[in-house]
Length: 284
Image (cartoon, rainbow, N blue to C red; front, side):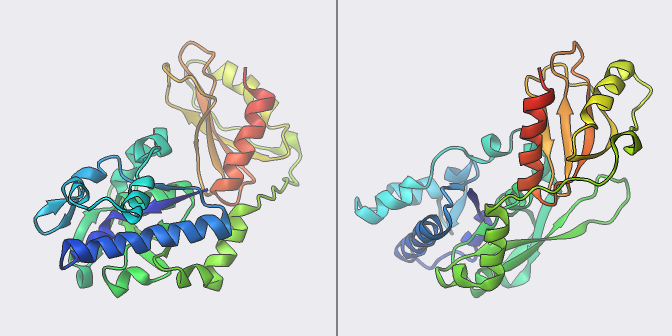
């Protein structure tokens, strides 16, 4: 499982390079404990982390290059590895543009948030620095732009941890338990009662035939819609969502036709697991 580093938690900036070193050391300690207790094995950082301003006059790369060689310095360096945001999110990476954050107490006014957005998209927790007591909250709220024209942005909450003590919160431990153990549920709807809704578009007949096959799965609730063409797709699963929606592409077809499936998934992990089951049985 992955944690998502909240890059906004560099603000407010630490008073010195030494203070930031202590904060980053604590961040590593929290990750190490999360790894030990709950089997989190990676922290997803923004691919542009080296360019992030971490002090008033230094970006991350400049600050890190000035850190003296030590075990703690090596520990900090050890968590700065791939996959970064682009690789972890793949096709979902463009969806990060919809997330922004505002909080006057830490000097942030409607800025894009990469780490917290990643946490929402992949269904995990944010990992924050303790530069301000605000970042020690176990839940953070950001705003997300709607795909619907003229619709108001919505509030999106993600769990967050910044201290070892925070890992002991019942809210946090219950959540970790829920995403660690995937227990899939089956639908009670009979296959021939599951609705199929497809656009009247090129490849509809092929999609309909495939939809009639895949709706036989007990993890499929309905076929929601057709996808735009994805002629360069090479994978069956295009995207999984926390609300159970799953985008699949018939990549073996010329135009890469695909569909959106409503599965019985109740969170991202379940939807992802169902996607793998469907891929094994129905993909070529």
